[in-house]
Image (tube, rainbow, N blue to C red; front, side):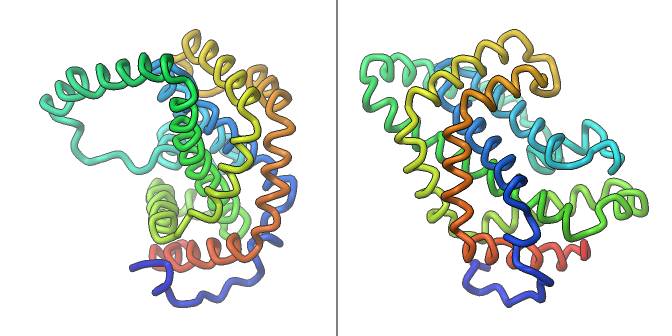
Length: 261
């Protein structure tokens, strides 16, 4: 089912009224930080950083202590519902023998063809930023429009899984190209900021890869460094009211199907 085929929902108010400007800025910051993680030129380290950013975003946007969310719940909301079966031996061998060496080769080529590399990297950065924004925005919208705390207390882990599914379904049913265009234009004018943030994030990830989340000091440093970028991104996204409202309506449709409302 595509986004064009979804029936209308009975949302009580527009998404832009439900999520405040300050909250939108918080989501935009994590989007920018997630985008910067893709510019880390070290294979594996960039994936570590990307995971840390998403987990910290969930912790910051939701009152996890009040909701009674545990580390496993945060992983589900940040990374999606885990597969029932872990990757088999062949999949791990394929990753070790093909994927990792390929990324190393691309990194070396990227160092030689810096301009081409940056164009491709900005594309990946835009994709990651878009994913982070949609996840964060829908988490906030859900938190503001449904009683997550009572759902978790009453039904245990199931609402966390259903919320994760509803967010994934919403994103899959949405044409995200308008928002990606906004993010891409903002990123292309902020090359130095993104590269500096990526370097700082890389240094932190290599030191702290066993930790569950970004530390407050690192987070504040990145927030100050990327301030002009994420504030500009916030202003541009705030004008996309029709897009945000349709996104919220689509989410309510999938959330209602999963009995979250």
